[in-house]
Length: 180
Image 1: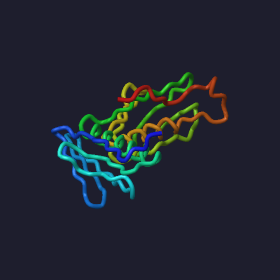
Image 2: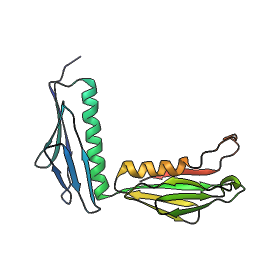
Image 3: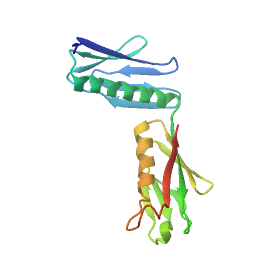
Image 4: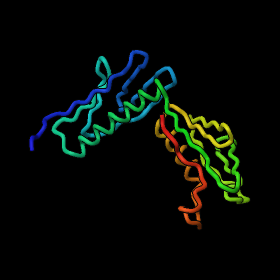
């Protein structure tokens, strides 16, 4: 197998987006939709600011270091996409007999009357994420941070897990339809 002496991957930054890198590895990306910051620290992987974008460099890489560099590039690309386009997850509530009602109270997503239960089920909505309920059954989760948007959608989906029933028969719940 051929050994590589250096791997360099570039993250291009669009014209309407500003990226800054501090000494302690904190990357701040500002765009039309907002600002995202994240810290990247590694003794082996280097993050450098290039004229047209950011450069992830690994000298004498091993397999895990190459994987870490690819992960950093993916995180940086997600940050750039978040501040330019944003992320949107669409979910839908399905029920057969007991009509569940969906509501938002502060940073809590509340599901009432799930399988006729008297106690409402709740999910946490993370900071920087907006949740909209339309047509009583459609839920739209959107924001600029992909991890927070995805975790909020997973929290909403997870709060309606079927317990003590056969999932093949009782398919009520809130499910992810698509991601944009």
